[in-house]
Image 1 (cartoon, helix red, strand yellow):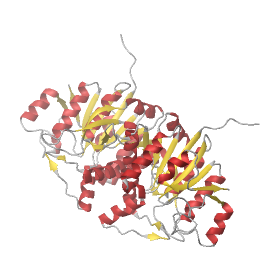
Image 2 (tube, rainbow over the protein chains, first blue to last red):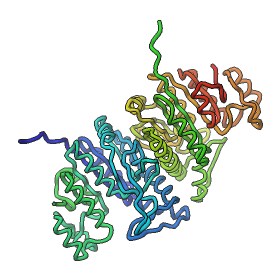
Image 3 (cartoon, each protein chain N blue to C red):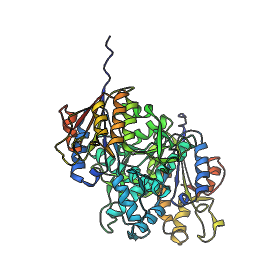
Image 4 (cartoon, rainbow over the protein chains, first blue to last red):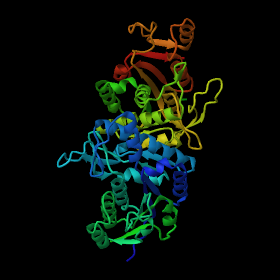
Length: 266
Length: 266
C-alpha cells in the first residue's frame, strides 16, 4: 500500500571557498533562491576562519586535516561562522526575495552536542552531535522561512562548540526525513568525487558504497574526502532519498534532475 | 470603556561593557531568564568591536562619539555583534533554560533600514531604521522563544548596516506596543542618568522631558547620553509604558517594580 509522498526538501551545503568568490556565490544563491518548496542551507567558513586567525596572530593548529579549537579559535569561528559568513548569506538571500534566518546550533538549541572526549586527540571545543531540534526547523519551514545554518553546536549547559559543516548538513538532512523527502547536495570546488584527484574530468558519476570502500582501500579517495563520504553514506542509510557531491556551479543542474557530479548509491 | 490590558513585555538593552565582566553578565542573564512572560534582549558590543579592530590592525574612526563604519569595520561588527556577542548570550540563555534565538536585522528582514545619507558626515555603512518586522517577533514570542537582537540592520537589497543598539531597542519596543504593554530598560555601567557625571550617587530618580531639556541646556547631560535619552523619550511618546535607565546590576530591582535608576516621565 502506498503512503502519500512527503514533500521534497533540499539541504545544500557550501564550503568556505565560495565565500571568497562573490560572483560564484551570488550565482549559487540565485539558484538556491529560485528553488521551489522548502530548503535548508548549511555553510562552512574554514578558510575565512584561518584568514582571521592569521590576521589576529593566532596560530592555527591542525591534526589530520582537522582544526584544533582552543578558546581563542572558538571565538574566531563563532565570529566568522556565526557572524560574517552566516549573516552575509542571510542578508543576500533576503535581498533575493527568499525569507531566511541565520542559525547556529545554539539558537533554540537547534543542535545539541557534547564536547568530544580528549583522548586520543584533544580537539578542544569540538562538538559531536546528540540531537537536532526538528520541531524548530519544521516551524520555520512551515512559515516559509529558510534556515541558514552555521557549523556551531552547543551543550545543554550553554557551551558553544565547533562542529564540521558536512556533519551538520548530514544530521540536519537525516532529522528532516521525519517530514520530508530529503535531497542532500554537498557542493565543493571540484565536480564531484574524482577517480584521480589531479584530473577534474575524472568525476565518478555514480558511486556505490562497495566502490567507495575499494577506492578508499586503493588510496584513490583519501584525506578530507573520507569523513565527507562517510557522512554522506550515513545520510543515505538513514533515509535521505538522494545524496549528491558536486561542484557548486553544478547545483542548478542537480536540482533540475540532470546528471552532474557524483550520485551516491547504497 | 476599558480595553483588556495587553500582556507585559520587557525589552532590555545591555551595552558591550558587561560582556567583559563574566560574573556580572551571568547574574544579569539569570535575572533576565527568571522573568515571567515575554521578553526581548538587545545588546551592543562596541568595546569588543574596537578590541578586535585593534588586534586586526584596523584603525577605528569616530566622529562625535559615533563610529565610522567602512567596509572593513562592517565586517568587524558583523563578526562581533552578529557572531561572538550574540551567540555567547544565546548559548548561555538556553543553558539557563530560556529558549532563545539570536537575530540581526537581516534575519527575515527583522529590521529594514536605509544607508544614512553621506552629508554632512559620511558614516559609511550605517543604517537608519525604516521598519521592524513585528509579525516575525510576535511569532517567536508566541512560541515562547526569546529574541536576542544584535545591532545590525539590512537594506531591502541585502546590504548589512551598522545601527546603534539603543536605537534598535527603542524601535523594537515601539513596534511591540501593537501587542504588548512594553517596559523598556536601558542598562548601563552607571546607576541611571546622573546629575553630575563624576558622582555615581547623583542619579536622578525621575526625569521629565522638560527637566531633560533644561539639564541638556545647562550641560549636565551631554555626549553619548543625549542620543540615548532622545531615543528613550521617543519610545515613551510612542506608546512604551515605562522607560528606565539604570545600572545592569539594578535590572532585578527594576523588574520587581522597585525604584532604581532613572525613570523617564513625559
